Image 1 (tube, helix red, strand yellow):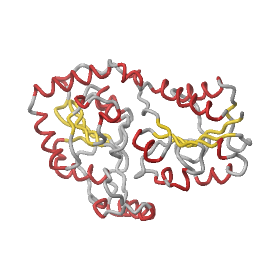
Image 2 (image 1 turned 135 degrees about the horizontal axis):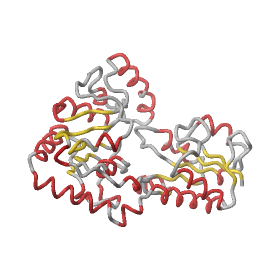
Image 3 (image 1 turned 135 degrees about the vertical axis):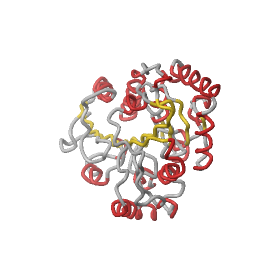
Image 4 (image 1 turned 90 degrees about the horizontal axis):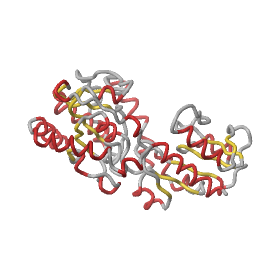
Length: 326
């Protein structure tokens, strides 16, 4: 069967040029299918995030039972993925969260992790006694958004944090325009919150630019601040922090609900004052530091962590789809 696969930015065909996606494509072909471009009359389609424009092109020629949607972003980033009308257009919707699987009656897969990078520098004494935050600055008028929380924390304790990522220090005009752009989706989702506007126009002296290699940047620090985009999934952020040999202060999902041990990080609520307090206490508690470092290294040796291997996860995902197509 001819199968088209869309890119994760939902704009074009997926380009299979590196692992683990080469293994994903290999599994599709191993099951007797051919990967073709969107304009080459595919008989089935796998969407990596929903695309209205591509859906319009393919919906008439591909029946519902041969359409599959893999969700890679939470509702605050990509609300189109979660709309009932859009989910109903697919045979299966596959989520990186058992919470979304249950709520939206779909399938789930573990978020894939790059286990092959487990060779962090054991140079604790030479590392900066500071926190590293590597995350983009985004704007969403959504209740419970974590983007405004990042800006709030930076305002409270920027003296402890070196900041990396895209779209910081853009100034009031660009920040306002990006926030306004998010307004229609927030209204549709009925999740409007003025708190999301916190930090418009602020510039942070601790901003260090974009991190070209997250692991290498993190390896210069003793601690990392990890704030998930949503409380309903666990992305690669906390694993990257542990792989780099840092101690994470973590704000996000209940780790145990996703199979992760809770003792691999200093867990915090979504309150900036409490996060700042936990960061300062951790910096002055060498016993706690030693415990968390050991727990993180033990986690990297665990069978559960090995099950998150990105090739393994994506190969399994491809096989699952192939079995359901046939």
